[in-house]
Image 1 (cartoon, rainbow, N blue to C red):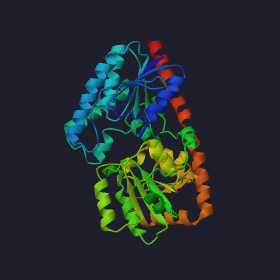
Image 2: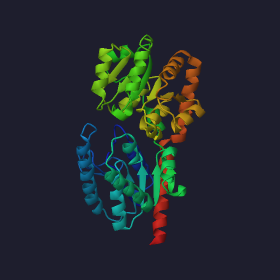
Image 3: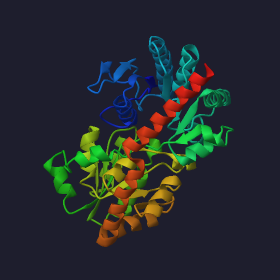
Image 4: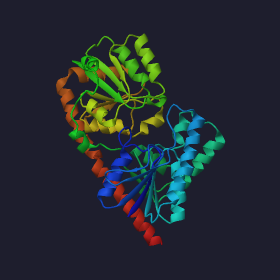
Length: 396
């Protein structure tokens, strides 16, 4: 079958590579996959994935209205490119933004192909509850669009059990919504050698330290202020260090605080390719997942959580919810309420000093990664797409 995949923020080498992993799996099953994105340039990958780029400029440092403009530009550009595609059997559109789903829905109606909608963040709930979206008219319009997408999608893929609960609570049939979390790419991670791909100064900083690592975006919602606060509280624990890797709107603020407060136990590095980050992760000891203090963010399914598991790193969260539950049940880590700074710091110290407990958590983390293995989850999405096509053929 021919799969038309729509993902505005598609990545192959860094960040969220979920769509790339899924596409490679679909290709291995003998399908034809064309992916329309706003990033990079148009190409055909070594695996045979046809990537069509609208070259839509976008980054997190843009103003709110500039980002909205980028969403609109991608929506029109991807629709035009989608219309050029022939003999499409199924359309797989992944949010955010929500407008990507609108493109998928429109193309499905015109091409009489089923539309499967993947929900990475439940919109407009997230921006509304974070206070970023306050215009009642716009909220109402986005809520209406959200419900229409759920209604007309053959299937809905949610990235966490909590997201599914949210969607079902809005009147969508539970049978229509499938949970497919983010991926632990165990095969790729097992091939990667633990290596610090930077300077001797970084190696010197890490030497003999128990390193808590956070790779990824340093934006407001990522709540990295919490890690800096923890580092300040543990300033006298020189054997414990906090490593932050990435870019984002809050990076310069965090760097300034680290310098002003003399936090030698914090090291902030620039963004690097995903393979280098994964290699770096394997040299660290504890993976940190942080978000700002907002309940809606507990439902997330961020890539780094699964990278930590694939690398066999125990995980600490500054929130609770479904990830906290699976970590505690498996013994692979723990989550704390944002306000429980003392408990958070105490857990890190215990992991650093109790070797038997730490090694047990390491093994539990690696075992847990099998539940989210990339091949296994790609296979589940493949089955969903096949069901969508079969249902569509029965209707027509």
